[in-house]
Amino acid sequence: MAHLPATPDHNQTTTVQIGTVRPAALFVAENGQLSVDTLKDNTTVSLVSRYIYSLSSSTQEMLDDSEIDVAADLLQGFVESMNYRADWACLAADGTDDTTDGAMTGIFSGGTAKTAAAGNVTVGVTELEDWQQCVAGATGVLLSRACKWWIHPYLLGQTLLIRDTNKRPLFQTALEAPAPGSYGSILGYPVIRCFAAPARTRLPRR
Image (cartoon, rainbow, N blue to C red; front, side, top):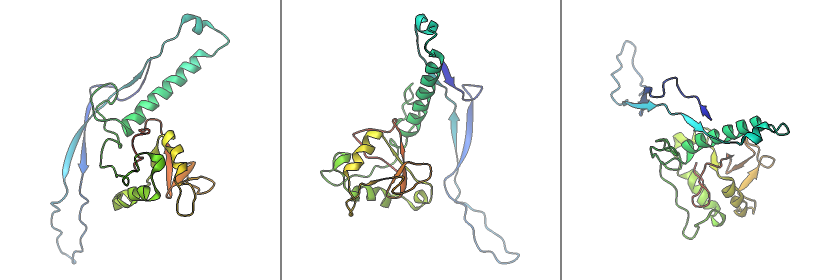
């Protein structure tokens, strides 16, 4: 059994301050006085640490087999399982306080999803405008950051059926449209493949 280290104390709680409003910067005359900013919201939130555990079993015969490196295989399995659970927490968790979601809420469970045009009920039949709507509906603050598409590999394959006005696939490979740290992009934003992202039933979200 392996676990992803969190904090030394499993029950430790950390209070983090959240600034929901940017402080106001104003022009002030020489020797003038700046009034106190009353707009900044000093909201706090409590963060409770969680462990991620992974359990695997093997027979004694398998462990004794000198022809197969069982230890490396088990360790690789632990790494993959814990990485998947961390990805799930960030992307698909629905906030339930259980062993699957760990009271986490992923980006696909929060916010407001964009709705494709009538009849575009699966990714393969969506249109360029449906994807452009995702970008057009994002806030300026979001677009000023390093935005990416987080997409399940199955859905990414379906994007090859979608064409732009020049009849090119919506998904552009890294050779067609270089994107640092990515192997391709959609509408200029890098694509990240993630098996923990929802598959089949929902559109990718930015």
